[in-house]
Image (cartoon, rainbow, N blue to C red; front, top):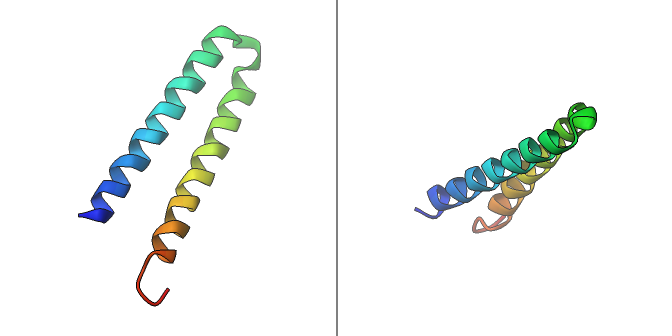
Length: 61
């Protein structure tokens, strides 16, 4: 159950980042390409961070 909760929190965070990136690219259309690149980088970092935290919280890990 804990794993499912972590996945849900990760998905909510990724969705929030996508909304922020969409709003920023709507406000600054000239920088839209770089905004989305930055958003994808942040999403990947968050996913890896969640994976590392999950592996660290394992018993014996």
